[in-house]
Image 1 (cartoon, rainbow, N blue to C red):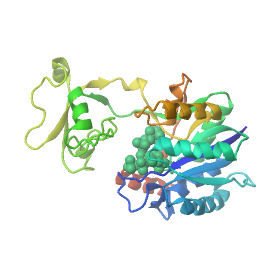
Image 2 (image 1 turned 45 degrees about the vertical axis):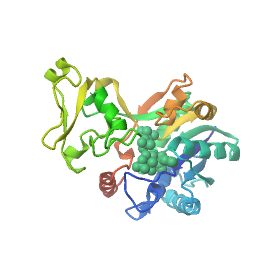
Image 3 (image 1 turned 180 degrees about the vertical axis):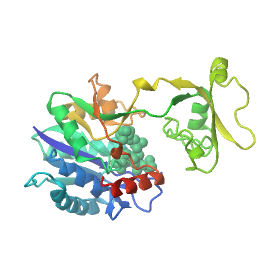
Image 4 (image 1 turned 60 degrees about the vertical axis):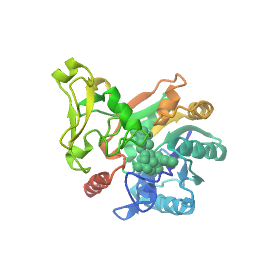
Length: 313
Ligand SMILES: Nc1ccn([C@@H]2O[C@H](COP(=O)(O)OP(=O)(O)OP(=O)(O)O)[C@@H](O)[C@H]2O)c(=O)n1
Ligand SMILES: C[C@](O)(CO)[C@H](O)COP(=O)(O)O
């Protein structure tokens, strides 16, 4: 039951603010794509790879794949690591389109494949053990498997008016990220990012029993004195939440059906492949993720990744 690895690597890396597309940014002497491939190949769980690269970067991706295969041979625990074929396609306008392009090419080129992994080039330090774990779960019968971690922060819901202004108002980008106006992403991942010094100003969230009792937006003007803030609707029970990582593993026909359905009836809010599969009514199983599988998104993530590499990641 052979396994193809699909790597969406065609993103521009706007939030990372690098000079080249994110997968080709260097981290400690190797590109993110190379780090990613080395660890995936070292798992011994991959039989073929399909990479979606940004237009104009396809040849560079091929070179990196060759270098990664050589490096993986050193990293692998197998005595004689297999040669794994790699194909490179041109990515699409968004992550879903890039995955779909690489998946179509891989399914045509490797017709014997029965399992597919989809893995962000941006999660470049994901250890080989996570790939092995996800593939093992699919081989054991799960149709869709994702690595997950518990949520460690308190999670609050954004008030309706703040969510609207994040999408439409000043500073909102319309793609789910709030810009300078709120200093936060509408999906909650970066709420308060400015408060830790990452951004340019102070972000203050109004929350607490009084605000909750009063209801959303009922406690008067939110912003004042140059301090930016956003109304919150109260906390969400985090015990029932998980952070979802990649690689995400699927029975190949299920993943292909999910992308066909997305093409026919796009859900613009879909942020990963498991959510596309879930739309078909297929159950998604979680296996333990790994903090080293962090997604390089902002410049601060590069600093974390460098530190992890120094510790041997
Ligand atoms: N058109 C796109 C957009 C994203 N990706 C890939 O999807 C993964 C997750 O995307 P993200 O981390 O958001 O990357 P970018 O889209 O490059 O980031 P940004 O939103 O900051 O531009 C990355 O490996 C990225 O290369 C892709 O293949 N094709
Ligand atoms: C697929 C993913 O990495 C799972 O956490 C994530 O959804 C990608 O999000 P992005 O905004 O495209 O980086």
